[in-house]
Length: 335
Image 1 (tube, one colour):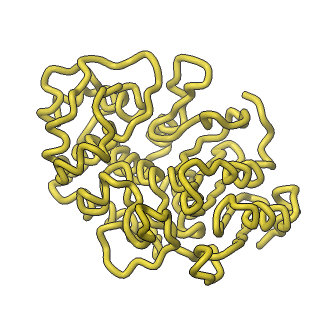
Image 2 (cartoon, one colour; image 1 turned 45 degrees about the horizontal axis):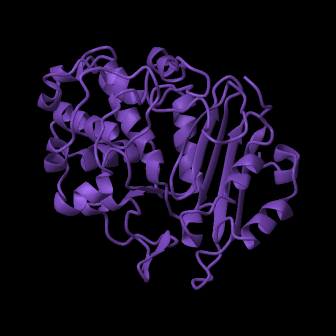
């Protein structure tokens, strides 16, 4: 059953159209899956130049939501007995030989690796393995949340080593298994996605927006997935239907491991949104730099997906977060 946007979200579709026209993003697409029904909505165009209308099947660069695909691959290693949540990373990768960091420390962003932005490092070292060699690994976990891409670079390498095949191939396997027919990776040819940025006078389109992932072949453990809102909501639904991992392992993913207020964090998933109004404590989510958001409420069996290309209007554009607020309007605030 398809439900109307105003019936489910408690707003009018015109409110989203207005945000798009004011510069939240050239276009956006939303999809919601819940016991109450399924909702899909799209607004705007690919860009100010490419006036094709967006749809819920339009392919977008979902940036760091790629980390959830990496998380899914890691959790499957747990279920298969190939890796353990509390095992030290030095059991798997030589980079961690002098470190006490565990797999969980990386999945919950407690590794705190002090290094230059990977975008700068990749210019000199456009290779994942060579890049990893340049990253100083912390001897122990931080008590505080410290979000960074380097941790998921190593988690992608973990998957690659234990699977014995290229990380990109591992991604493609799970994408096909889950029936995500519109989902692609940045190393593929023939992408047709809205541009993410005007970069030094060049329209950046159909290439991974994250600079280091682009330089390292188009996909890494932290960026490089392109997906439609329809596929993204289906990916979220797969988590709740235990198609990603067993109920026990999925329960661990949707557990808050944060030790301090405002640092609520599951395995790969955030249990909060930094610099965003308070959400229900039942929400787990992940955003991407280009503007997308995937959120799930396991208790209510709800999945929310939003795709957009907010960076087309500049990296300082913050208006897109009102699109997130509208999409999550049916979830009460507070923990």
